[in-house]
Length: 349
Image (cartoon, rainbow, N blue to C red; front, side, top):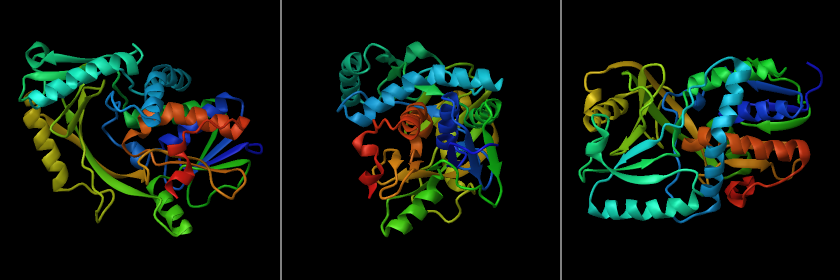
């Protein structure tokens, strides 16, 4: 391709959504990944786009709210350009309430959500008996039902992004030899990039946390996803349900499943009895990038010119992606800086 305006290292969710957004604004973009698009943490199974609780409001939560509300038109546009369904649906979520104290807290959050979520989504308290067989086990008999949570099929979303980027003239390169550095440079290189940056800075600015998930053969239709007793249960549109995940700070092998995943699957079947006996059709393990602040690490690399980082999405990378891509494109292409202070690279240094 002709000289690129933007060169992005890393073809995960952060790199590819940024590439798509820059292409939509008329920039020439090339992406390079030493493996393949979605080969790292972005190629998982679960795909839960869930909000923080509506209380103790901080800029990170407000940013996430904006991004979750942007998601439906964002992914609809990508799916249309790609001719591929990314598996997005704002289908909501049910969460088990453990006891009376939890019930009081949930009702308080119901009132908070009316204000903090600006009437664009609800946080309701409902009886589990009203939900039927899809209700997760709840000691109190009550559930939270929020209408902001959405789901995305990570692998379908990555495939749609590849097709959409190529349809707009973007170039995705893979292999051992990176391309020439052309235009503005963005490192969206996942946990390995955080480790390399930590080494360069002489202190830890981020790390990787291993997660494991599984895919069960069970058709729940467009039912809400569930969260109970630490387990996420996410129905997808292809007749499967994803369950996950572990959170392993220390691990020997980054991409190998083990008995910890067996425990997650067993727990999912306990808290959602209708899943008992469902066939396990896929298992996955990978390492998610977590910045020191636990917020995405985005913006210019200090003491450099035209070099940027977009990394550290951790468990909320897919949910944050539309807004992160938008403000990063604003900065890279137009010099407009609206990055929240907690997200800045300097915050992790």
